[in-house]
Length: 224
Ligand code: MG
Ligand code: ZN
Image (tube, rainbow, N blue to C red; front, top):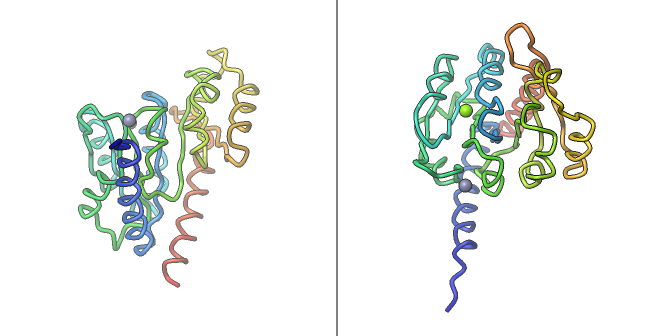
């Protein structure tokens, strides 16, 4: 008998993802899964967005990393509730890991849950966590060829934050070519050009506002 191990792993993951989605839907919590390479600027982007969101709503954050609680400490300093998951070598978060930490949050008061996935442009895209939206963060310093080399991450994304725009002039990043590749992979993707650098902040209010709008829609659906 041949056992399809891969299919089994995905079935288990999808079952946990469906369970997470049901629970979070019932509580009216919008869930965003943030993906991207190590160093794309995911945590810094999140810090900046949190300073905008914290004034209006309670945000919970799950930080995924192979090791350390460095990112969770940064997020905690922003005033958000945070749980760090250390995958101990694992290169992505799965839906079971999320289900195990959800009880640690005040789900009655939380309006938005952000999951910062393990820095990796490959396999996080294959694992549904129960999220509503996937945001890929890619920085201009990574090179314009990344979308065509790692199409699965961009295909799985709803939004793309094209980050570190302040460094564009120091790179040979071909914006036109990169965007052409991104739209060829995922025509419906929404692109947010961003810079999180102090004094060179760009595009963050627009991204923060777009999320708030989705949070409000999710709340309305839950209150039906
Ligand atoms: Mg990080
Ligand atoms: Zn992985």
